[in-house]
Amino acid sequence: FLISIYTTGYLEAANIRSERVFTGSMLVFLSTMTMVTLSDHIMVMWIAIEATTLASAPLIYTHRSAATLEATLKYVLICSVGIALALLGSVLIALSMDVGGVNVPVAFSALAVVANRLDPLWLKAGFVFILVGYGTKMGLAPMHTWLPDAHSEAPSPASALLSGVLLNCAYLGIFKTNKIMHAAGLGHFSGTILIVFGLASILVAATFILKQTEYKRLLAYSSIENMGIIAFGTGVGGLAAYGAVLCLIHHSLIKSSLFLSSGNILLGYGSRLIDNTGALARRMPRTFVAFFSGFAGISGFPPFGLFLGEVFILIGAFRGGHYVGAGVFIISLCVIFAGFANHVMKMSFSEAKTVDRIEEKSAMVWPQYVLLLTSLVLCFWVPESLYETIVHAVNSIGGRF
Image (cartoon, rainbow, N blue to C red; front, side, top):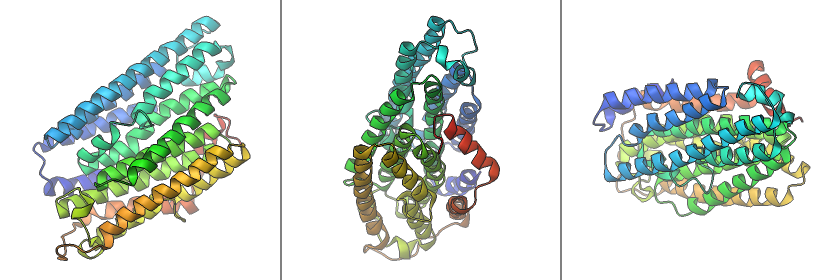
């Protein structure tokens, strides 16, 4: 809803060739992601996640330049390969049902009940293919190569949905499959693989954030980092799994706010290059407050929720004896913070060619504030229904704490 409010002002200010195509694609994209969240059948979820690819491709190609064409083709091709692997994984899980003599619907909830009767070999193979397949759509390294281009080339409202919602939809497919693995007594196997992919994603983000020259690509690599954090916490389990879900929720809110703020900066400065910005605090003060607050939140500063989530993940990692993983986690996050802070400080306070104020429309500023305020409120007060949902989800993957 908030992104839709922002989009009304964005369409007036941005040079978009076909507003009808953009608006229609946004609505279809939202519908397909809603379908993902409501899907319990394995194949229905696969269809829904594939549909999100087709629905979001026109959004990435909105500006119809050579760069957007390249980003769109890379997105469609790489994600389609990933989705094909996820389909193979779904078939292998169905095969584990046949070998185990299980006759229930091919649904996540039904399979979790009879998971101990599924053939473990085929179930393991199915999980690996689903993790790699949906992990491609989630932006886990080394399958992440489509994400920086797609998120940076898409219009900012679309980037906010791609990072804040779509990546979570892909994670949902992995999460539900991981639930079956835990019910089958194979949680250690799935957890180990998730830890490896999670740490790899964090390391890749730490490497590339340092040398970024564009602020939207900077935010894209931050999304890869946070997906790695979520995968790592899910793999560790226990209290870390609870922290991973907290990171999932707060990343959606904060990163959406950051991409919307980046849209204001792009419209104001006319460039995605960090070196072509500067003096943001003086030229766009309201956008600066949202952007800098978003930076603090996404970096895990208290009292934002990512701080709590990352602390829970670290405590869970130490409790579980994952000392090396926790060490890599801490060092990588410190490197990422240093690189991110350097870029944000340069954008906010460095000298610019001019210090003239840039117009900021209220409809393109207050949605970011509401998203950030929601994240802050959820740090101190969580509705009982939401808390029970989180605890139930965490308990289903062995996350009792």
